[in-house]
Image (cartoon, rainbow, N blue to C red; front, side):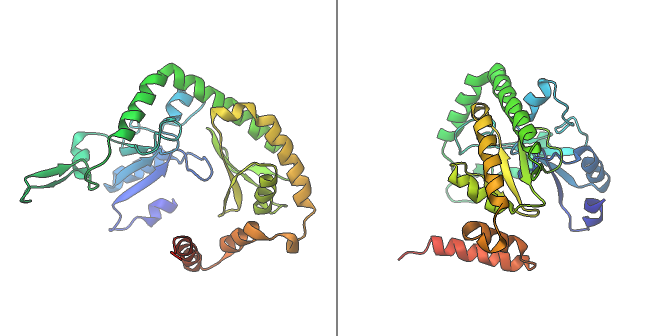
Length: 281
């Protein structure tokens, strides 16, 4: 309903996630595509996280909602193959329902003195190495390889979520169906929890809106679920003893930025932070 109400005469595209990066939730893509089709709007599925995982999750028999071109109205799908495709960074994928839609991506200029110039997109020349290495990785792993890797990831995720949900102070946001999820708390400062986990040599991304810790589970995590959960339980006990004035450093800074009512000010803060990092002394 919110997306339908947000559509105006200036709307050129609707986007749904499969799944969303912050919380691992798959959007109601069939409903969104139906709205887009009725309005004559391009419907894009952002499967940058799940594009190389969800097909195998589905093949393994897990209940996954339809997320691809089987949904009428979906025009394009993007997927980052360096994530669950396990390829080197530098190559990605965008798929179109048909060539007629793909043509709008192509850049062509016929009046350049150097000759007719055409590229797949506006980026122009790009290195072929990452594309070749990505292709080699995908061919090497094959269907069987991806099925095994995804099964390991799903098993590890299940054990991890069950362990987190057994900690009274914590919960998992929403109902993630694959291997990305977020940890929240109504009684602890999760940013302080993330900082405490660093002392145990676990590095977890902090997120806000709402405050939570981001988890991306891969096959390599299958061997460390129990040690991670043991340290998480210990960290929860220590953070529970903290008073608000005890929370300092990055935890305090991230909490301050996340709670700023003026989001433009929060953006300015981030820009200034990056400027300071790249300043030449």
